[in-house]
Length: 63
Image: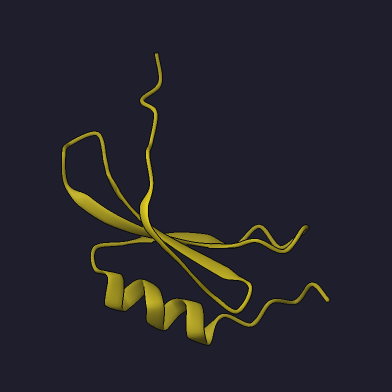
């Protein structure tokens, strides 16, 4: 059965939403996800600062 991921500390920077979660090994990770339809960009980071930097520098090609 897949592990259910619960996000906390959600924030939004432009079209990118950032959330903190615990992975299956119990480590705290941060995910940055573009919420525009059709973009599909997402990435995991080990710190919230890195996720925020990625969110600020993301240029979505979907208008």
